[in-house]
Length: 194
Ligand code: HEM
Image 1 (cartoon, rainbow, N blue to C red):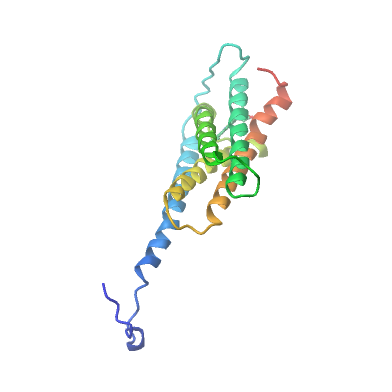
Image 2 (cartoon, rainbow, N blue to C red):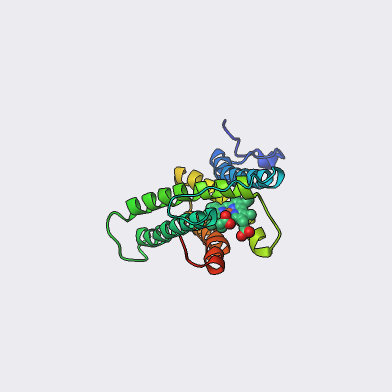
């Protein structure tokens, strides 16, 4: 569509340039998806009856121990993500394969965290009986929302340079807080056992 450059002076509203609308959508879509994912998980966790299902793996003493070690593994790979991101942005010296390391450590952290979160949501649900547990449930849902937003933003070109480090840093900070309010608490309460 051609926009008459004199339209504004004749009292007609001037439509925003097409690229302006597209750039608004590129922020709106990830934000809406993030909110939908986080809210959807939270509502599911709150509404369904926690199944309380326990599982065990040979060599581990309890479901909590398996989950805490898996969460610690996810946190370790998230740390690798953080360090490899600093390398990619030239803030730390690093090898030429820092981007590959970043991609694979991220995939691994996510794959390891998913079964833990599935158990949390299905068996334990969204709980609020203590500040720590409330924070953990809230951040657990927020994490998957923020993660989805980051994955969508990665696909977009010509983003402002600060956006990915902020969203990536947020995802990392949230996973850290999830680990502090779950696995670290578990190890401090029951001891560092398998
Ligand atoms: C990245 C995502 C998540 C990770 C890595 C994670 C990890 C853990 C771990 C290691 C525990 C301790 C072991 C246990 O008590 O079973 C735990 C407990 C728990 N999680 Fe999660 N979780 C995640 C997401 C969620 C979500 C989305 C919810 C609910 C909406 C949730 C709710 C709970 C609850 C209620 C507990 C029991 C808390 C307690 O009494 O100590 N978690 N989680």
